[in-house]
Length: 483
Image (cartoon, rainbow, N blue to C red; front, side, top):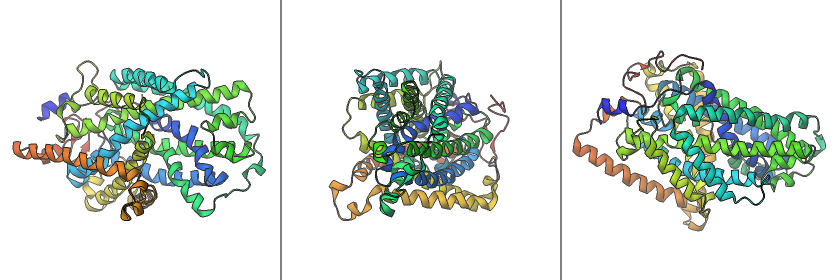
């Protein structure tokens, strides 16, 4: 693929700081705030509040790693670009993100069904799968018309969503009964640790803005603002909300067993109108998460195609809207189909969490490696934390690996207990399929004499006149506008 061909397939920087921030915050809240805060307490009780804090520290470390790398490589598909460009090879980036693509499609289906479940609060006869399919179809059309349409709709959802949360937490803070926090630890250390993996899923979208790095204006400023700033907003919201819902509900098992814990908590002290507002917030939260996952998920096959390790059609952009339409259509068709085939969806969603953790650990390693071995490239970053960068690198890397071990159940693999493998039972075959696809396109490239170094001197989604690999981004490109 020539430079001119890539330029024709580049993406437009139409997303401002608010759009990037709402992608992180509103796009993460769906399953996190409105579901996981309740279900995760099953093993540890009200001490889930402390798990939220500790998970937040890990999330912030990961957000700093991504923010730093994003200012050096402000490309589509985030972790794929960071890892492949740091190590000068397409394979590690592909392996890191291949399984995440499956997870994105499954996550969109699960969240769409969740939207249908919240809709049943207002319309009990609604089929959640059919409602989820309708949501996916509407958001598919919104994403098809480009980043501007996505940003405007996501910003609107974000504003209303924040108001619905404040309706719960502000009056709820005045209704907290400290006695409801006792006993604080109900499952000991084992129960506390067991809550860490599902609770971390509440932060799973902290780096989603990095997937859209080629579409964010002034990326050296706006990407760190979105990822690190958005993560801080999420931590504050989660801690405040968790403290309120466990402080107003006398029996934590009521929340642990609820599919709509925030609405359940609202019933304890708000009238029907207040509860309806919170339930409406859940509706918006799941919708915004579907929206963000769809917009971000299409960037991985787009970037593989840009790097010539995936079918060329996936990096083609529509003449009218400038969006990678084939990548979008594929995600929509698979996710929409999964809404009507729920068997195995929870396992596929576990793949999303599992693959995110692999990406988080890999980006931490890449950030530490780049900072240590390539000071010239590191100097092009939008901000310079100095040696302090090693702190989020170590915390983010080791924390992700620790949760990865907890989620993988490696002992089942060692003992050949395939019935207990769950996540690995899907992950390993899917990874094998990805390796085969990569190998086919790598071999084709070898036969054609593809200049891999020239490919790695570009950034997926970024026009050639915008990025100089020896220097970095031209700060004046993409608009220094605050819009």
